[in-house]
Length: 201
Image (cartoon, rainbow, N blue to C red; front, side, top):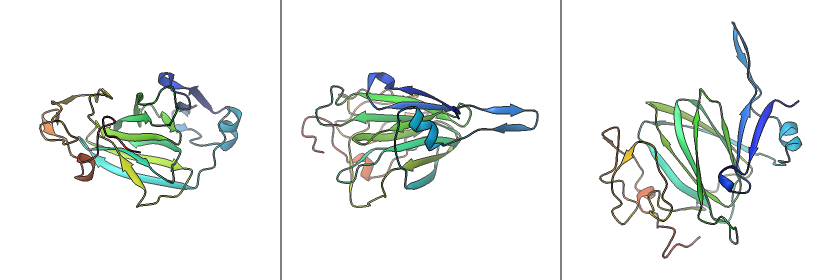
């Protein structure tokens, strides 16, 4: 018991948590508990996860910002190889921090996990040559239920580490670079609208 350290309401946003497991190591290597429902419940977090996902992305890949419209998901995310900058944006109606974001550096080295409640948009940028990204969800994925918002919206003012470029008036990645190379984004992610004006969730 007590195998995790939970920092709640990071960035002043209710519900967002950074979770760091306790690592037990010696000259053979290390051991750590990645997930314990009991420990989370003791920290006041009562979530039943139903699906685990894993992806691999190359440096300069930016995925997001995504959210689920009718079937929102709580996500517990971590990186098992490489390094990413992970971002959550509060889209909860009536939230005092609506539109506010928080970013966390997640890596295989720091072993941090990021708990993102329902009602947030989420995305990440790969900073290492490659990164393997894992996450638990508390609802199943519904492929026709995805919404999104512009990753580079000046109203959000997300400072993506190392990214250079100027806002072209849309979510287009054209002209943006990371370490001199163009950002790598899906066509869909380059079409999401800005938070305001005209944002619909």
